[in-house]
Image (cartoon, rainbow, N blue to C red):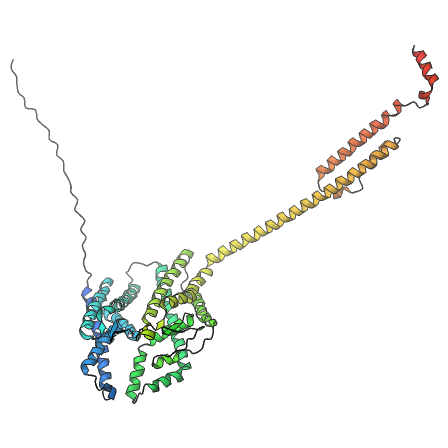
Length: 519
């Protein structure tokens, strides 16, 4: 027996494995980023140069004074560096005492400068403008660290970030609104930013007017303090006035805090508000001579409240949204913008000019921001919501529902009173009918010869039928009366059959005769 070996073909299964490419995240800087970075650097150098040059000009103008005899040009340059750090919100330390005074007007000018320098990024992606922030920050750190003597360069970090950030944000928003190819933004979002900016601008203008009023009212005291400083020339006077002009936004913030009712501090133990005046010494600054010396009362807060209502009326006409939810979201966003601006404004208006009493001066940031929000931003947000057509329709529906429910309640109350009156009348009728039925029964028992006349009188009560409100009760009472009459008639007909009309029932002879007959 032979065995054959056959080769059996083996089928091989092939599997193709596909490996998907791993997602790669690429971070690329936008085109034009270098222009934004250079704009930040240029703004920082320009700000430092302005402070340094101004300080040198003042030094050259005042070096002839005897109290400037020990001051050298190097000291003037160092003072310029310290002022640059002060502009950024930094702190300077001299003799163990910390000083922090922010020339807010110069900071606002730096924001405007950043905004203008970023025009070189026009035509490039809007995100390239944000590179002005690191350029400004690094340059500000370098200049503060190399030129300042008494200043602490790292304490100006907050201002070195906020100034270019606000300027670049301003540029981005403005370019976004001008770009027709940009993706559309929700109307309530753009309206919220515009509404918040409008309310903030109105608040700043009103605060400026209040500061002017305070300046006019306290001009005499400010002039007296100016004379105490001993300005001997026109240059000295211009220097003093110019230095105070750099704090114009600070004075406006103090005025806004005073009008809001929160007040401001001229020292750690001296509060000035519409209801409180703490008398105490003030620093020899002419601008502080405009501080009110009297407390007119809490009625002053009605001024910002009226301002907020006016802003609300204007916003209801200019920034009206068809949907109530969008209107609410727009008001909330506007309030957030307003609170952010006011809080930053109040913080920049605080200062420290020494130790002990002068360790803190300016408005109380949290309280002032809260008061201004409640008095201005909240009415500006609520007025458009209250006057919205949807709100008015809902109020009308609610009023109609309440009115209909009130009418239904009054109708049910009247029906209940009617039922109670009908029940009382029915009870009185039943009692009268029962008394009349008893009288009719006694009369039938005595006069059985005329039962139908008595029954007719019993059936008809003295009270007319119109007085009976319930017909079922009336019918039942009539049936009961008829049944009583029938019983009385049966009794009347049965009694003669049982009696002897001839009167022989009592005769014994008659009884015997009847008995015999029966037997």
